[in-house]
Length: 230
Image (cartoon, rainbow, N blue to C red; front, side, top):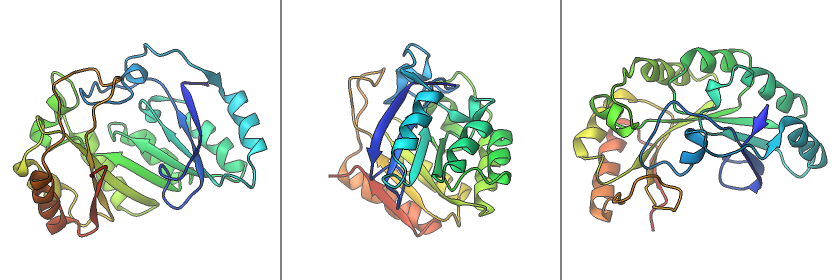
């Protein structure tokens, strides 16, 4: 497997773990606010292969205790179960980031015990999913199935929404809240602009709007928090 990035240590990407983060290329979404757009559209070249990663992990036994696997969209990789299994066989816990659009793969890695923590994006309310994911059309049914899978509680998990002023409003968080009501935890991630974001003129909501969205979400998921707010 070719890999598109490796962050050698993080205290943030995997809750409760000292981890590294592995980036896999390729995604079926084209979110206009994406920080890893070159991974999504395939324009970024791989930087290492899995053999190099496993040599790195061998040297980090006792220093790291987790590996966060992100993208792009990892669940597009047919060899994802084998890859995660090799990581876990080395004694590392695995966190998987996913957009939720591939419930069959998500179900497989959950049922095979290959994931210890899952973080799934909820892009927007179902009615606005396509535009937020950068697509002409999108049926949110696969994402709804992935929500149900995680809420079965096989592993620890979180849902998260990157909040963009031009894409989200209060009614969206009422709809999202009803959708994921009773979830274990939910994060509103504040959009920040970077050179790697493909489209300009996107902004973070005001502090007042963020507080409003947070209050709405907490009606449905009490353990809701902001990430990235000043």
